Length: 431
Image 1 (cartoon, helix red, strand yellow):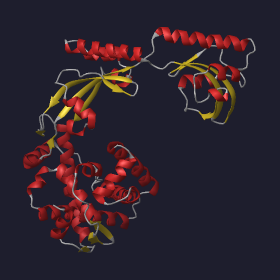
Image 2 (tube, rainbow, N blue to C red; image 1 turned 135 degrees about the vertical axis):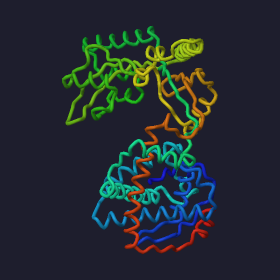
Image 3 (cartoon, one colour; image 1 turned 60 degrees about the horizontal axis):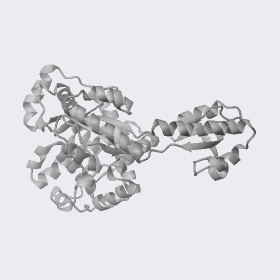
């Protein structure tokens, strides 16, 4: 169980528990904060747990954490290993995801300090240990249990026994989108290209490239350096720019203007080494202006009106959307739990009636037109609608049941010393 800590960190207002050792399983500690984190996660995953009293909830979680430590110790006894490199990679990925959700690394750092009393560095150490333990348990499970594929009757029997405690599916929303880039009008584009053509003519006549760059280039970062942007690694520049530059011989310039997302370029290749190359360029920039923004807004409003009047949103997405991955599926993004949508985006979606398109939303590159295709209310799982999910749950249940027989045997070989009783742990975490 790798805990999705960010959910509890950013939703709980409880003060951080004292991070004492609640129990020792062999040489494996269970911290009070681990009990707190596990309890928050399990309350989200299994609402039925909330019906228990505070001490009973803590007892339930501590039993599970003690079983987890038994598994870790057994895995180590059997010399199963997880490399530091694998754990570090997963830690970095997890912390990066958490920072994105929290609103940046500084915000995550503050949340960790307030909620669990740990710095980012301390949390990384804790997370690395948790990840290693999780991978060790997975390897041990694979060795002693393997993959269980339940028969149909086993799945139905599991459902009948546990249907009243099945996790609730949250309110969900199915979304589609059309993304529109704010592009420059054809007239301005043509005028900028003509200026680049004129520069090439002057170069043909013997003009100095660096001097022309200082005189004419609209790239403020390189203009004063005669257009020199220094050595760059392959893949760091606009693909069209890079392709044109690498097709040149050293000391040569492009014989026709090159269009990138920034505008029209005339490019000179100064040199190359290994995977790097050095260029000068003269740029005639094409940045969208108010007229371009108004034109994109008008198109977005038009698409919204057409769709809400019964037009085929999928066809409009395939024709107009600049985001090709979703456009190929008619703009469909898929199903999302409404509670997991982030910040302003959640508020925007909440304000769009089912089957309708919302007002265009600004994005870094333009506008996004969002359609709420369908909504599903929170409900319990059923065999008719959620068979695949039930098969997974039944498989997990049977796997845990088989593994528990091994845990009983292994537990007899490992001392368990509870330093704090469940009542004291419950008091410390404010349950």
